[in-house]
Image 1 (cartoon, rainbow, N blue to C red):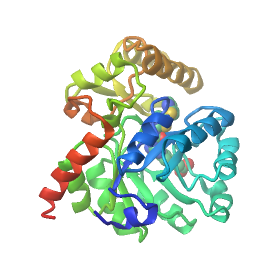
Image 2 (tube, rainbow, N blue to C red):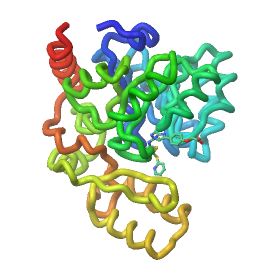
Image 3 (cartoon, protein in one colour):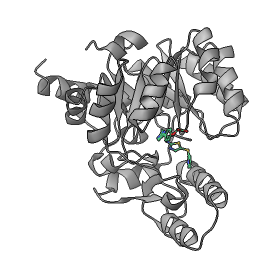
Image 4 (cartoon, rainbow, N blue to C red):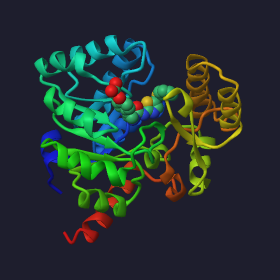
Length: 307
Ligand code: TUI
């Protein structure tokens, strides 16, 4: 299937894997790229040298294009921004901020830059700043989110910019992909479904929590600080909500959340850990390889789109 995004990125299918903190490491990224999508290494809060190693390991596993997602709230963002240049990464996506200050360095290095945006205003600003495409991410997504829904954000961003738009948030099967195309997108980005991929290193307890989740099992913490994060409801979210109501600062609570994400993903503590997942978790029902997921979704999407 050819779209402006498959052409731009040199990939077979218009499916991009989200740059999920702790989850999007080299094994998952390489598996998605090998299956014909675009795998991403999520730099999240990792130090630059850890990201450099991840990039090198992904290169050993695939010769197909893959990218790095840079979480702009990370204290290491400046160093990671340089590491992607040094390591010859071809595609960079960014999240949780405005990547304007890195744009010239990346464009001079020939990097394809795709910021994740949650508003039309930032999408337009990114286009003016030289972005090659944008990911329009709706509030259905897991992790750090904006306010607008995918259904409302994607067509408004598609109308506002000329560069290709990648839809994200609440997409987990071929119907979601077909719908995203109807809204004006040229590709989709998916996170939650890939969490349970066979190649995903996420602890089995986390995968089972996602697989067993129902439609309304996610909740948003941190709204009062202007840093909303969607995760599956558990002891951790109840504790967070209690501390938030007590007026604890954003910094104290963010520290708690990020440490707790590692606890859930790596140690499998899905009671006290943060189980970030999108609203589509209720529809994610089985562990499959990335190739099985992508083949199944593309076949369903193509049928629906009459191709
Ligand atoms: O970044 C994400 N999702 C994430 S990052 C993350 S790690 C983390 N964990 C806990 C607390 C904070 C971070 C987990 N999930 N998605 C991309 C995304 N970017 N969603 C929304 C935005 C966004 C929001 C506002 C981008 C830019 C923006 O405003 C930029 C500005 O400064 O105007």
